[in-house]
Amino acid sequence: MTIRNEFEQSKYQRLEKLLHQARTANNCQQLESIINQTVATILRSRPLCRQFNGTPLKGVYQEIYERARTNLFDHLHQHLVDFNAQPKQQLRTIKQLEPAYLYKLQQQFFQQILDDSQLKKMGLAAQRYSVNSELRTYALTELIKAIKLSGKLCRPHVGKFSNGLYSILYEEAVAETFAYVCLNIDMYDPERGNRKFMNWVNFKLDKQVLKCYAHFQRHAQHEISSFSGLEQIRQPMSNPDLSQILQEYLLKDPNKVFITTHIRDRPDANFSNIALAKFSGLSWEEISQRWGIPVPTLSSFYNRWCRRFSPLLKTELKKYF
Amino acid sequence: MIVDRQSQLFQTIIPLKTRVDAEIFRSYQRQGNKAKQVYLNTLAVSAVSFYLNSIGWSTSLEDSDSWNPALQTMMDVADLYIPSYGKLECRFVLSGDDTVKIPPEVWSERIGYMIVKLNKSLASATVLGFIRRADRLELPLDMLESLAEFPTYLSQQKRAVPIQTATLNQWFSNHQDPNWQTLEELFSSTAVSNFRSPQKLAKKAGNRLSCEAHRVKLIQLKKNQDISVVLLLNIRPKKEKEFDISLIICNSKIDDCLPNGLEIIIVDRDSYPVMIAQANETETIEFCFSGNLGENFSIELALDEQVIIESFII
Image (cartoon, rainbow over all chains, first blue to last red; front, side):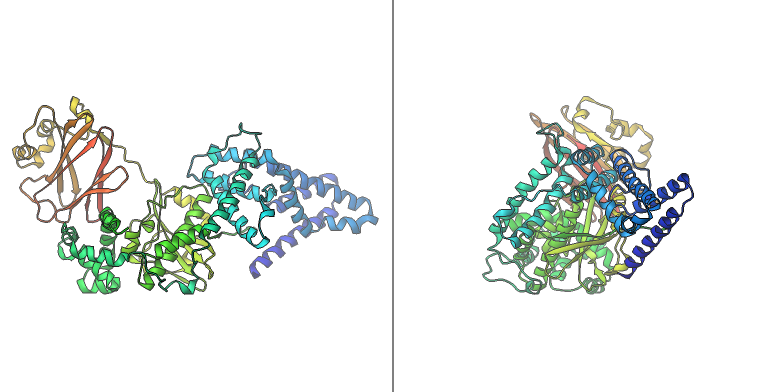
């Protein structure tokens, strides 16, 4: 918390300094240069269009950045000129030049710039990058930040639920919708419908809220555990006990696979013995001491063969379901 | 220089359906500690899956060990499978913890470890950061790397696609395969010096019918110890578009046994092991199975830490 405050303070101090310089500028050129520096400083804390790995901004990100920059420049220029020109209005103008106000203004400018066409461009930009690539991650992260900032996310079905329930459902639905957008951005077709990007997003959100409610209803009957209740075993015990079943199967070993699979040169350190030792509650350290085999060797052997035997184990468990 | 440090954490609510999944998995365990472990691991894996989806990476819960009740029972596992990349382990911590516990059974075969803080009410989770490797039971949280670095790290973990996939049906037309030689080619090549008696190998291969195709490959396992094995693959048409395949593996020094501890696994196209064998004072291992035209499978040879994979398409 303290660090953040110090950081904020130093941000504001720097702006104050620049603005003071601006107020005492001698000529137009000097004024403009200082305003540019001021705008650059403010933009360093911008909510969107961060640089990707230090590379210069391109495409829609550059476009949005430039517009915000222009808006900030014009605002500062106008108010600084006013400030100097009309000493009587200084008290009023001074508010428009306060650092806190300027940072809020930056936020507003970005919000205003984010109309549907910009959001659409950002969505299309993400499509251009290959799946599971850093650039795509960057583009999607920017897109989600932009959607949130734009205020264009709807609040569907708000009248149907109580406030408390709605905020739970909405929060969940928004999170699911964002995950959907990110995973399925390639399915967005700019030619379909009335061509608005946010319609695609909001359509999904609309359905998602109802889906979340359906889940909620269906599962409300399930008792959801609290942390302290996790170790309690619930009655009635209608489900089979997998630990029991698997231990019995290991002992039975009908194809003699578990007992014959062993660590190199150590027939006694076989899968069956190691697994049963684990089931009996021994720690890896204890098992290691018992056999004189290092923990990493034992555990990687165990992991590897658990996975290889998985189809066998699954088949055995199927009998009980 | 003023550095603007954005929030490097990812916080998410845990949706109801995840809580329900976790409850179902938990209900399969009668032992209190194990039940709790499975429940919390499920929440952690879900949270990481959600985080990855939110940055555009696809994940597969169904292919993760942590979503498999048999493996949940056998191990303390919380992996998340990322197709084409590998498994990410998702370990949880609780409020007030300053270390994260990582069980030995997940120290290997992971591309990384994500650490997730579960809040007390279990309604939300925060992905705190990641570590690249684990070889200790407990790791202090201040060793975590920031999530900001994670997408870069993950994209570097892409598993190299095996470039050489042998097409078996081409062997019928005497197609020249640079990696798989016919017995005749092998005998006439310089590699024959590795065989003490090529006739014995031919004998192992058995009688060759005109409709069959044989191919052989020499695989060097331990260079320094001069251990190599021979893979002899035979394919014969069974029905229309169905083939019988037999695989023989023996030591290149024909009379010697296969190296002890050598594991041979035949894996289907979904990476499921369908046949497994382990060599212990064994001279030859033979597998027989059948498959359809166009099906994929691979053979995995593992000796100690070394794994060699041969891929095929019928």
